Length: 97
Image (cartoon, rainbow, N blue to C red; front, side):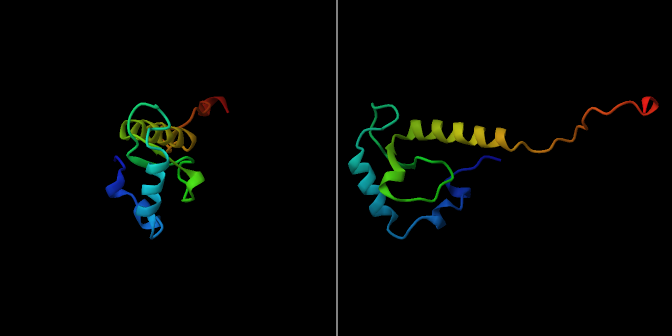
């Protein structure tokens, strides 16, 4: 199942003045801080899964860079906490016990 803004609870955890904070970040970082080419359109949390919304914890990025950064963070998160598999681990043969 893919996760996106519509299925996330992130919006409910944003502060009430998020729109003002987002506008301030995009004004501070008019060009994407990751690629340095495209216009910033997203106020990105520098530390993933972080609910710190202070200006020093946010950066302005473009949509393509934000998607790529989010995908890399999600892959790292999944790798760090793999889901259990249905396959059993290697066990010695019962006749050899």
